[in-house]
Picture (cartoon, rainbow, N blue to C red):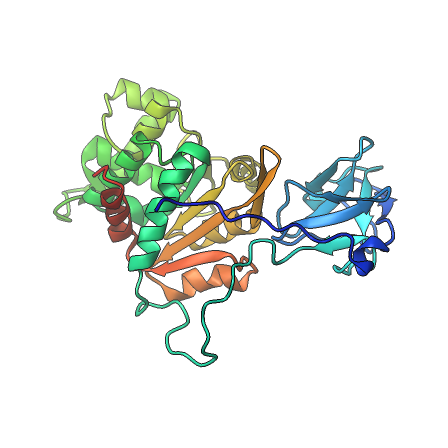
Length: 363
């Protein structure tokens, strides 16, 4: 049986607590980048605001942001830095209708099948069995390829192995990648592998060190900078494999966010952290499935931008968020930050990519 998007159960606004709720209050921002006292901060869940007697969903949400009421009645969710003087900001710190604000946490809740209150191995660890998770993911990705938007968030470990790098290329070439978020390192070592067949100076298949291999990633960056851009480098150096090659060939958008530790960096790397966040958000807001691999900081950043839902053609549907890392701490960190809808797999991301590509029949 193929994947079926779970039905969304909207709140019952006829129940007394919501039917009799007051309109949500607003206050104009007094200056750029500053919300008025008592502003409402968003969560990952669907949130409704009573405006002129009607409950309105803030359709494009994210955690830790303000809600702005526009003159046409539309609700915008904006980071505090993007508030402008005069914007009408929603006020209220309660979530059950008392102030005209309702946070809906169980719109996708499925019937509970676990009867026992005490059970072993209910957490997610390196001892967890993931066969069912893989099968569910294969079905999800097949559905999303045709009906959704799949965003990958990747650390450099994904390209340190020949097979995992090739598997990710195949996933991109077969429609399972609609966007990529990464940093300078992922792109650099992917291009280094295509250019010099190494990653950080090691052969990507044998792991043998090359003479003067510690220069290889720097030489790659230098060559890309000389070409002016990653697409120019791919064309001029006749690059024919890798993740960035697949993105360039398939016109798949990617965002490379800069870091204080970057070498070079590559021309496309965005050095301003807030510009990078805005560019990442532009891809996140399209995504219906987000898969984060071996990059703790990028995973938390993407996770905090990703709501638990998306409105597609007027229908509210869930957004699926996967975190994959060999470290239990890394995958649980996102859950500790409030992204409770994430599915965590504690495993080697190189094995994960090969398994996914094989499970989908593209590798």
